Image 1 (cartoon, rainbow, N blue to C red):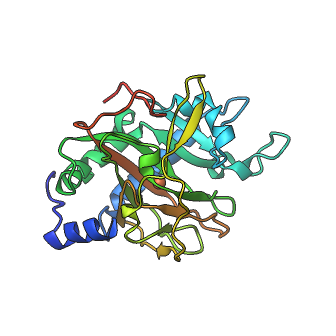
Image 2 (image 1 turned 90 degrees about the vertical axis):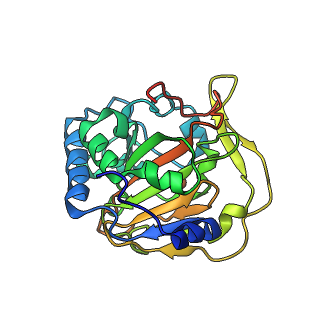
Length: 277
Ligand code: FE2
């Protein structure tokens, strides 16, 4: 049923003030399992290419990777860096090797599409200020046991830029997220920090970061957002967030969906381009 996830005025105020909002039990056990089982199936059917694409926080590698850059309107698979050794051999089984699947699961896969529709993110987005929501990107993130990669401190509007800025991220804990397995960490109220950089297509065919503000991140400890399975964390597009590598023996699966406002300009040189929405 749509429209049943209404935020209270207090929750909307908290989001505006802190730049994030935690909603426990947003997704039920059945919905979580549908997404995790579907992911397992997709990985089972996936045939890796000769040169597998690794999701890395290393900008040089990522920018030269066409498989990544053209994934905005496809379902594609990215490996954990440590899942492949220097000789190109897998260090783990296929099911434990994937860092994430992205970026159009919510549009192309019927099971994801149905669960996303049930979760009614657009209503939440509207309550948080997006006038005409557009689901621009979805990801199933695995944070695999022992090798789950770190995601460096960033603002999502760096990657999903609009004018004016409108991005809001919806991050669902499909499994429990703890300090040990790489839960989200945020700078509370950090959404008031100006956008630091923009990741965009470069004229020569690669990508580049435009530096918009080169002041350092504030020196304050990040807040650990440990989350029980089923929790939704909503992130303002300018809120700096981070997640550490997973050295524990448990995966930390999450599903994320990002909204932008259709009424804002979506630049043609954003890295993620899709003709699907
Ligand atoms: Fe992010």
